[in-house]
Each structure stands twice: as C-alpha cells, then as structure tokens.
Image 1 (cartoon, rainbow, N blue to C red):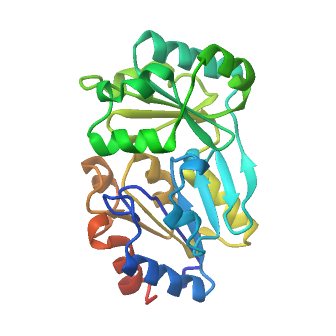
Image 2: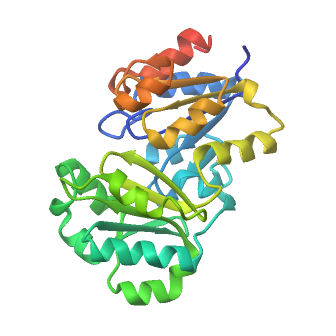
Image 3: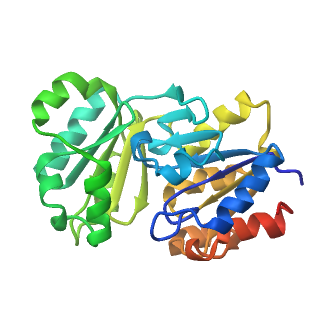
Length: 275
C-alpha cells in the first residue's frame, strides 16, 4: 500500500502529554515529507492555538482546525475553506451554556475566545493546572459578551461547552441532536463541540483529497477521541493510539503505542515502511 497523505490529530495523538513533537516523531515526519507524502494536522484547536512545533516546523502541508470548520494551507498561511454556524443555531447554544453555568469557548476567524467567568475561574471547569495554563495561553478573554456577539454571532466556527465535574455530555448532547444544522462531537469526556453541519475532520479530508487528486485508498489517519473516529474510518489505514478512550479503542481495530511513546511515528516507520 502506497500511502500518499497522512492526517493526525494533535493533542493526545501526535503530540506528547506536554503538547510537544518529539525529535523522533519530527524525524519520521521529515522522511514522509521528503517522499512527497502530504501531512495534515487535524485538530479541534483553533488555527491561532496551533502549537509552534506544528505551524512552524515546515513539515505540514495542511491544517484542519476547529474539527473541520476551517482548512488551511500551512505553507502559504492561507485559509482554503471554512464553515460558520448560522446565528439562529448559535444563539440557543450560547444561551444554554450561560443558563447552565458551563464553560463557554467560541472560535471565530481562527481565534479561540473564552467567556469572561470561564476565563477568570477555570478551576470550576478544567481538569488540572496544565489545562488552566493551556486555556490562558491560547484563548482571548471576552470582555463584553453582548458586544462580542453583536459583531461575531454569524461568524462563529465553533462553540465549545466545558462541563464542570459531575455533568455528562450525553445528557446535554441529546438536547441538540435533533438540530440538523449542527455537527456535534467531543474531544474529551467533559467537552462538547458544536459547528455547522457538514463539518468534521473526515469531511475536511475529503476536501483535501479532492484538492490533491487523491483517493481514500492512499490515506492514513491517527487519532484518540470521538472527534477522530470519522476520519479514522474513512482512511485505508486508520489507527487509534493506545491512550485513546475505551470507546475509541473498541471501534478501531488498528492500534499503536501511546502519544508519549511516539506511537504514531513508530507505526508509520514500521507498518507504512517510511523511515
């Protein structure tokens, strides 16, 4: 099998627990690039939150961000495609998050924003100090939500709920699943992510495959969470890292070592014969 495009989720997949790209993984990816294999970073992050080890590495051709709501040519630093939520589907989500005292993140124009209370009191929602540090370093605080929405309600790529401990995503998801204008997914047991119908990492990859005149027969994908499942199933070679959720591991036959053990790079080197 001659793989010509490799897409990998970032956090918990290609990046280690410190959100870094190891030297070995970078070396394997460089070998891929040298063989004209297209490399795609496929993430739920906003474009502005892309780590420098990815954005500035010179290794990647494309970035799928906001779970497929925006697609970028990294080398040219250009936006290729994006989708936004309609105002009348976005407003009820925002109202719900505020009424239920959920953490609220909004992605607009490639930048991630945090609602004021959530940004100021992340300990009510987030899982550890590293998560809090990540929030503060990658999100912009919304000083006045009403003013922000007056300018940006119809420009939102994604709305993310961050749940306090004890709240379950499935109960909340069920209230919005009937809205066919929404694409709903999750990258963590306490995070729900909403974007426009038609989004998703798999849909973004179909766009890139068409752009590159390739088919799914030459696609390999790696991930660790629900928001990666569609692209993993789309690929000729779809792989879950060992630190994936049990639900993901149960649905994906091929596994590799965890993100702290260079699992993706080792799989590529061994099984795709790229080293």
